[in-house]
Length: 475
Image 1 (cartoon, helix red, strand yellow):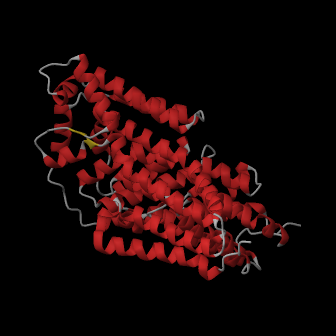
Image 2: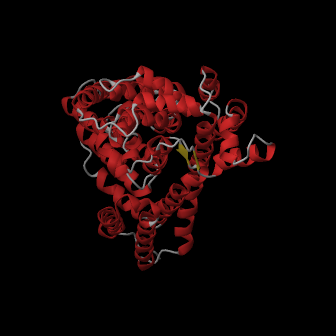
Image 3: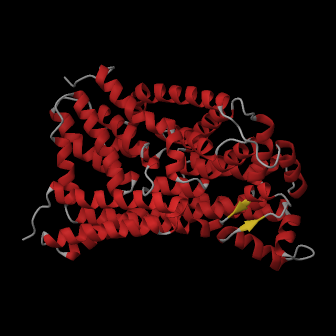
């Protein structure tokens, strides 16, 4: 007969993981994603499994937990690989260079960061996907910001802040629908109620990024804005027609097509567009004197799976127009698999259930309910390394308790979104944190301090609950 793990036993794997990752960051710096964090997750999983065996838990129970979490991670892995395909062909076809080229005419240093927040927010609201927004418009904004001389961490923080604002309030967002469904609230009731915390948070975010834009000591890159634009037009055929493919992708997302086929179709269309619009680029990369069918196949295929880089003679511009295809996502895929193993062992061993009992002890009034929900959302993101699992667990854990205390379910759905949804990107081993760090090429630890919207959201949720603004009890 297996024994229930104690709270102390359940904390040991968490503390082990946090300690090892802290050690990795101290000793290895930006190289932690190349294998050190993956090993830390596996070691912490091993510690959790040893404790489970001590409590006479069967291996099959632990294995079921691992398989369950891995199954849930497969869509995220597929999305990552498709983002790699899309990023490679959009760079080759000139779509991303065109975004950077035209963006440099419109955006200037005085308002670049708040503009990046607003642009990312608008696209994310329209598409309902923070991941797609960061992988397309976000990559272009990063290139523009680097050319203007902004710090990578600031740019990434602005992009992620806007993308997660849009993801949070868009009726097309899967996390928004999931939070509302888990708390048993109608979708638009949930979205309207979120604006009491999301609106002020977005306003604070924009004010801070305006100050950062005006006060930043901008260090221009080796290439000026004019030289980057000239290099782009010299090596690529730039035309507004290149935006046809992004528009098609946005329309497909708005029509609620699944993200994996949308991103794959976007990648294939990018390859076709490269063949039509950039024959000279393909010929140069293939090493042939002129464009051939075999050379075109080699270059377009490599753009989808491997590294391609333009040779412009300017290292700064070459770095800007380098893509790594699916191969660039493999470290993150590896990390997601290891993170899901850790979450599966914690679930299958019963340790996660023991830890959740801590939060239930503190719920008495509205503020303690919101504080416990926010804390649980953050905690589940740390433990399970998955945004969707965190939303489901937080909603299910507190749903009956909110009803018993006479609190409205929309308060629960909002508190879940203010924590489990937006804070997932701040955790290096969470699938969201890993993905955005990989796509933008900026470490989670580096960009996290500048994700103003994501940091302020849970604090605003607590503040609104503390003052009792529009928090009503059920009759």
